[in-house]
Length: 180
Length: 209
Image (cartoon, rainbow over all chains, first blue to last red; front, side, top):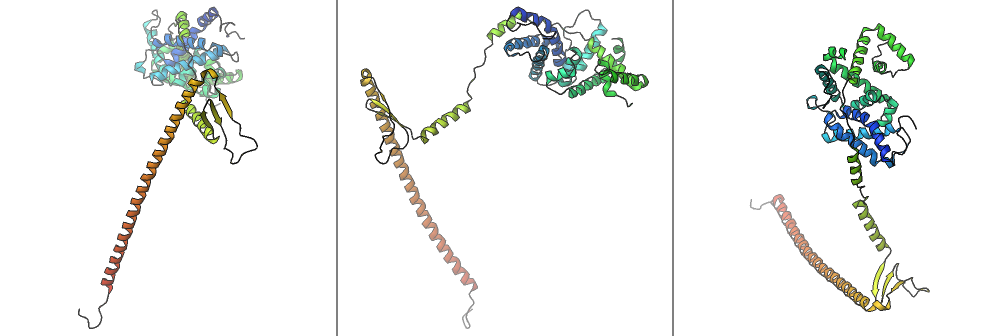
């Protein structure tokens, strides 16, 4: 059992399951926000992810890492949400990506954050998935391949494409980026 | 070294092997284009890291409550499978020449063909004998079933007879129609021959024009 794996007994002990939720709810929320691009939905989607984890706990086998299994569920929940919305990515104007972000952020920083989030929301969903798992979770491409069921080489190309597109999208606000 | 544009994201995120990273870094130092791109990709990474994320706190009470309400969907046989099984059962019954008959005080189930001559061994017959105490009620029920089956058989015979009569009438009509059409065809044929002879006949010498 690796350091990322939850404590044994989480499948049967509610207290252990609660500890697992506290450990993983933040990383899951970050992935959901990057992929879905809507801050208002993250709370409900996060709840949905852990409900599915709880309902499927008897089917979990310690063959890979727990995080692989967890993020597979999170990605599926995000994809279901996007399907319900009816499109894979939204026009920039319709996204409220930051939602209720921290109030202590300066005005310029909030604008920059909003610009970055809008740029991410403008990417196709497969690129957002790779970005979320590589940048926010620090997964390598082999781990990502197990989560997404896609070859590592394909994911490398997607990640490179995502960064270059973001670079092009954010180029007009280059001075702000230098200061971030 | 050609510009390793594809490797720049790997350099920014530390995905390159040490030897690869060293080679790309050396190139970036010497190439203004790659240096500018590398710098902008690093800025993108920093901007992504600076994105604030809303806190999401899972409501465990609500989660456990929803989990307890969750009903595992009952596995149902698809309709197509049920229909196929029913048809297969009916075909097997028909192929096996299965006969189920109610007689006085017993229900007889017979399968296979009845022997043409007296066999050395009688065909196997399973007989369910009713308990003596329920004979009267069972007798009545058996009588009702018998009457129903006789009535059904008589109805089938009547319908068969009617259908046979209808078919005979239709056949007769078709026969009449056929003879009429044949006669008309012969008449038409004769008329065409006569017209042809009239048109092509040459007048004899001395005949009036």
